[in-house]
Length: 223
Image 1 (tube, helix red, strand yellow):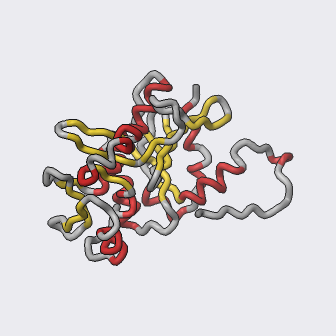
Image 2: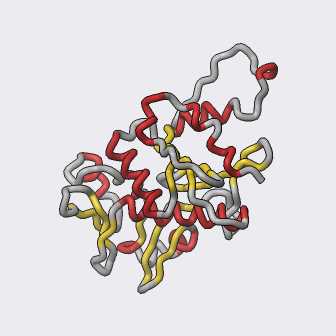
C-alpha cells in the first residue's frame, strides 16, 4: 500500500501555490476533498488512486457537523438529525471560511441557514449552536477533516498525519490559510492546498502513459 504517492501529481501545481506547501513530509500522505456539501478522502493503491469508503460504506461523507447535548456528530449521523436539531447542525460552513462577517456573501447566508452566524471578536464570521457555544469555520471544517483522517487510518491500519487538501479556485489568501488551519486543528500536516479544477486536470493524466495521450486540449469545468 503506497498511500504516500497520492501527493505526487498534486506537487506539480504551479509556483503561486508554494505558500500553501509544507516542506515537512514523513510517512503516508492522503488526498482530501473538503467539499461544501460532501467530502471524501483518497489514497494511492498501487499505481491507482482509491476513494475510500467511510464506516457507512459510502465514498462521500456529508460535510455536516452537529452538537446534541454533549455529543458531537459528523457526516451522515449529523445530517440525519438535522431536521430535529436545526440550530446546532452546521452545513455549508465552507462558504464562511476565511470570510469577514460584513462580507455580502455572509449577509446573504445569514438569511438562508437555520443556525446562527455571528461576528467574532476579530470580525470574522463564526457560527453559534443552540447552547450558545461558538465555533470558527476552521474548527467546523476540522471536525470533517478528522472524519476523513479516521477513514484513511481505518483503511491503512496506521496513523496518518499528512494530507493534500483541495479548495475552490476562487479562494483568496485568507480562505486558503483558514483551510490549512482546519487541517492543523484536525492534526494534519497540510502539505499543499490545491485548486479543485487543478486537481481534476492533474488527475486526468495520472493513469495515462505518454504514448496513450492523444494530442488534444482537455477542458476542466468546475460546476
